[in-house]
Image (cartoon, rainbow, N blue to C red; front, side, top):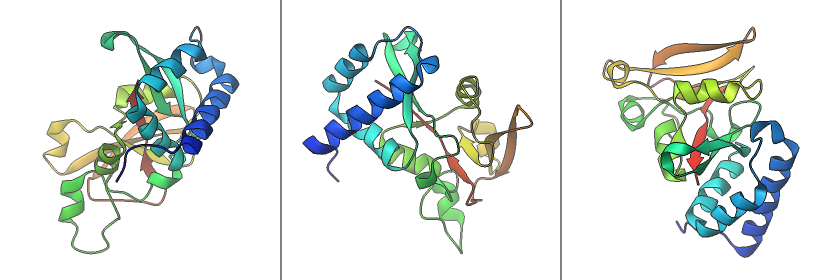
Amino acid sequence: MAKSLTKEQHTELVQTLRDRFEKNMNRHEGIEWEQIVAKLEENPDKLWSLHQMEATEGEPDVVGVDANTGGAYIFMDCSVESPKGRRSVCYDHEALESRKQNKPQNSAIGMAADMGIAILTEEQYRELQQLGNFDMKTSSWVKTPDNIRKLGGAIFCDRRYDTVFVYHNGAESYYAARGFRGLLRV
């Protein structure tokens, strides 16, 4: 699969990202759009990943700057609910392969890798929740610690009762209301 955008896709995506950026300034105070678009133009592979996030209804937006990576801009999925195009997936490839019947189409970790993004950690998920109320009706898989995953489990989060909750499930489970949120550094 080619990981590049047509001129039309490129133009449409940049405009969509700009519109979302301008409508949600509370997510990225002190950050200028011109700096972001310059980084995006230097990194067409990152634009492709953002296009994948957008195509699966993640509504990616800038949520900060990563001082640990030389000032990379951090994009996260900011859709109100878990992205529609990434639901009904189990946690990872191992879990997908372990299912004998009724396998989902993909796994959260597998889809994220294919898209060139990372799945949110619990800490990142909590940071996102400081910017708004997300996953009030859905839930999202988050990066599971190795000790939990080795025992067959995986964790997911949601927001209910004005509180972020962390839960566990078998990694092979999947539900129509559970997807995953991604992160991309540009």
